[in-house]
Image (cartoon, rainbow, N blue to C red; front, side):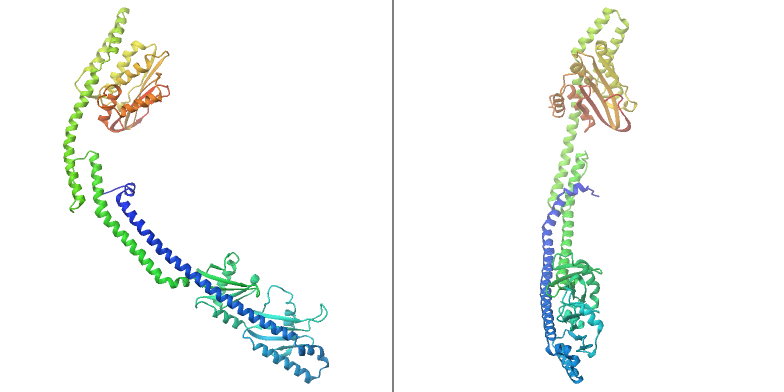
Length: 587
């Protein structure tokens, strides 16, 4: 089964092809969404224009009706017969009184019949204690009505007066003196049913509704009882709305509102329509839009599957095969049945593996021979300077007659050269390599015991049996003596310590020798990494042998330590998990 990380998938050709396809189809989908939204916006705007036009005409018609009623009120107020009746009532005989009241009743009936919005028109005459109504004829004075409407003309909120769930127009005939009771009051009661019917006529469709709202929301007139919850939501949201067209949420639905205000009436006329009714004309387009989206997604799925099966999967097999090849697995063959470009690539890959395996076998043998040659070369590099100094030390010990130290020194010298010159095996245990390096350090102490202090830690037990190439530590210590410590005017210090963590073992050699700069250390690092084939001496030789033996992550790593000298870490990836052993007193 082929597996791959999400990061690999994101950077693959399959992802790029799929992304390209999505990039191509996304503008088409976006255009469809834009067209739908544009259609909805246009429909809403056209609906708003129509609704606002209807509301404006409705308010203009209502204002004309009310102006006509007010004109009739004024005519009645100035009617000479009515004014004469209120003044001469006491001097009139019963026949004249009845005739005058009948004339007034006929006048009121005629005015009522001039407008469908007038439910009743009444004249309240306190002086004769009569109320004359077009509907109820002549009756005793309605003190309650007269008292209420007498107090209303002083209010300036609206021309219309809300009383007892109905709308009224009121006008008073004042006496000549201020503060005296009016001679009479003319009251027109509007027909609320006719108003509601007129509001129903300006609806856009059966789901819509309309209503009137006065300044300060003192009263509302709706087209039906079902509009009451919507009107309450409107009253809560209307003040915050910055436009005459807005949306209000009520009882789980969104409503489209349009409103028009009339200064002359002190009224706002509003119409509403559920948003779903606005979108309904676009339902077919909406269905086709979703069908298009679904078809596009199916096309994406088919394209993705085809691309994965015929392009990405064969390519991924080829990539995985290359990775396995990089890891050293060369005895594999990959197959591809279709006779396409991948079939040709697979065939060439298999042929390449066969040739590569033959070349690696040949190169491996050459590399083994080269490693042995490098070791022989290093073994042959016996430092004459060290040999001369050893004889001088032996000469000095002979002159002093220190037989015991001569015996000790010659024994160490013999062991040292035996380890250097033996050819039996190329790899030894790390404990043997450390024993040889410690012996070399002890030999040097015969010469520098007063000038150089040495700290050579014990090798941890977990590292003793690690197999290492011979002569990987002693040349590093020798380099510290020659280039860092021999020429120092003050006391020198050499430290060798060890640490291990997991499958990595480290041997750390550092000194306090002066004279090396960060730039020189960086130059040494570059030489270790970019060495030429002909440069096979010293630290470069050691680094190459360790790297060839243990692979990536192994070798020499250089840095400047806290003692201002050179710090050399020998890192060995030995492949055996072990406990963490930190270096003691090794910074």
